[in-house]
Image (cartoon, rainbow, N blue to C red; front, side, top):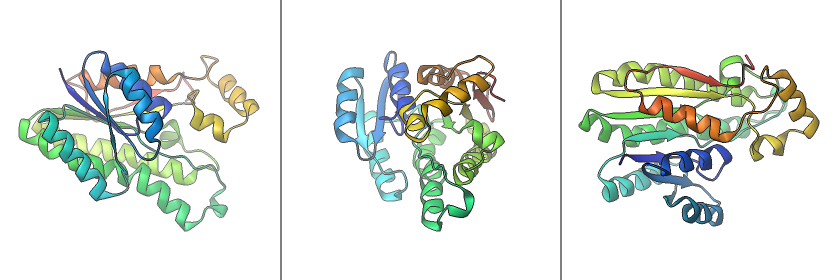
Length: 235
């Protein structure tokens, strides 16, 4: 069995990732504040959960050390945790910009930096980062989010070259519009319907479809430095 660490496990995609890998592997997913949902998912999916604030280096290091003590290694890291911000650029405050960057980009650095040394020592491992279609193409009124997710793509491509000689693959998935609480919380039903119509496949994506794409990238040992769009042909 492989050991899988998934950040942001209580969101729609995070839960789908945990469910996908828990069928065959040992899964530990992290959560920040939703302890009740995390414990419910842990029981349902038969996996483990751990608290982690990915913007806090000490929190990240403590959790990763705990996982490594318990399991000895981490085979696959999936950097999924993130937040969105839909707001015109000129209305975006410095604090909002910083929070999006701290979580969506620096958080990826923090967790990867904590996990990768153990992979390098074993000359084996896989990292899959969750970016976004907006990280590839940009979105009006989502400048901070688009910039952070674009940063994740640059991070992925550069780190893949650096870690390749150590036998570690690094890839990213860029989901399109996914039918999830995060999207429905910020978009009206009419906007969600319009985005579905703008998608060539004529519907919104499902979280499990993202999870299956992540598994494919994580398990293929000759794919690295790639960004896989799971967007129904949106772009």
